[in-house]
Figure 1 (cartoon, rainbow, N blue to C red):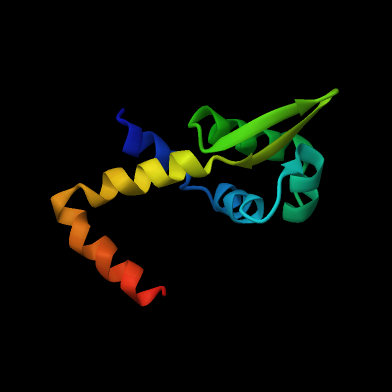
Figure 2 (figure 1 turned 180 degrees about the horizontal axis):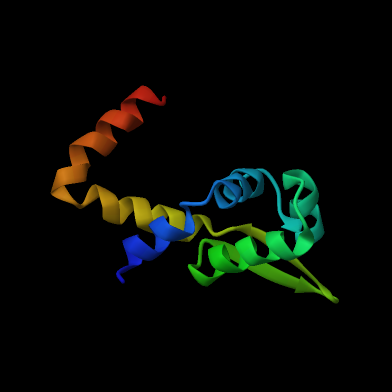
Length: 100
């Protein structure tokens, strides 16, 4: 499975997309993510592991807790690689114009 397939699969879950959206605003602990999503901590932890495994998140250990944040470098790298794909380049450029 290539990088795009792995990342696509990691982002194919609504809870993981919500986690990315939430973490774009602030770094959070597992319990805080679980509270915001209204899910069990073990499920939040699972989703955070999937995103971290694909390097979409950074984690910082503080004492016994772990704080998660977005790995902006990884997201930028993904989008830069997507823009290089001829079949996606024009679509992405057009999408970027409409979002400004």
